[in-house]
Structure formats: structure tokens, C-alpha cells
Amino acid sequence: MSKLIKLDNLKPDIGAKHRKKRVGRGQGSGHGKTSCKGHKGQKARTGLDIRPVFEGGQTPIIRRVPKRGFKNIFKIAYTVINIKDLVSKFKSGEVVDLESLKERGLLKELKKTVKLLGEGEIDFPLIVKVHSASKSAVEKIEKAGGKVEFVS
Image (cartoon, rainbow, N blue to C red):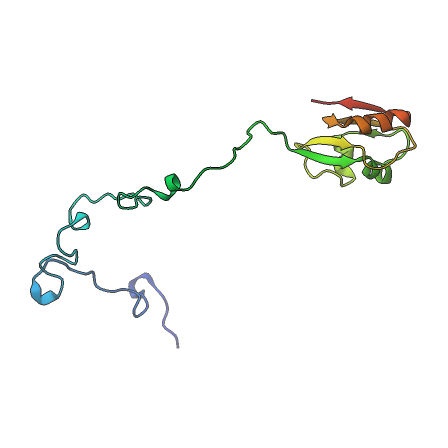
């Protein structure tokens, strides 16, 4: 019969625990005299504080590598929808807004800004409510009898 496991008979696995290295306890221990720190130098001293990115006083790599380009923090990332996508998913006279685009699988998130582009042809009127649109897209929608409204 197997032994019940209780708090008083729990033990760690064999080899899981080992004795702490006791340095500075005489030459016979093998860790005496300099206590495994070698002779002198920065790492032998107390109060050692070397930052992980410190490279021993040489010019750090982040300063040696040339910097190129810039990050445009004002860029607006648009989700692009073409007229041909609207033709395949919507019928004549419908209102195309962010919610209807999400329902029909053309938009993943309602938080995204949407831009309508003019790729494709349309021959029926739609009322399109988007954040932005190209001139060609607006012309094609209005030519078909529809209207483009901009939401903020």
C-alpha cells in the first residue's frame, strides 16, 4: 500500500536541493582567500552595480549605430474599403455605415478609421458614411445617385 502524503512527510526530490556555497572559510574549502572573486578589479569589490547595458566604458552600441528615418506619430492608419467591396455586399438604397460594414465582414473593429477608395464600378445608389474617401470614390457614388457623408 502506498504511503499517504501529508505535510509532515513531504520531501523534495533527490538532487533538487544542494548545499549553499560557503565562501571565505579557509584554503581547505577551495573557496577561501578571495572567495571566488579573483584578484582585485571592479567585480571583486563590494557595492558592485554594473547596469546590464554597460559595455566596460567603450562607446555603447546604441550610440555607435547610425540612426535613420523617423516615426510619424501623427499618421492616421485607415482601413481601406473599395467600391467593388460595397457592390458585392450591399443592395440599392442601403445605408453603409461602420456597423453595417462590420456585420457584413468588411470591418473587423468599429474603432478603426475607414477610407473609401474608388476601385471598381457601381450602378446603384448607396448612402455611405465613412471617415474619409478619395475623389474618385465620391464621384462614382454620386454619379450612381448615392451620397457620401463623412463621420468624425
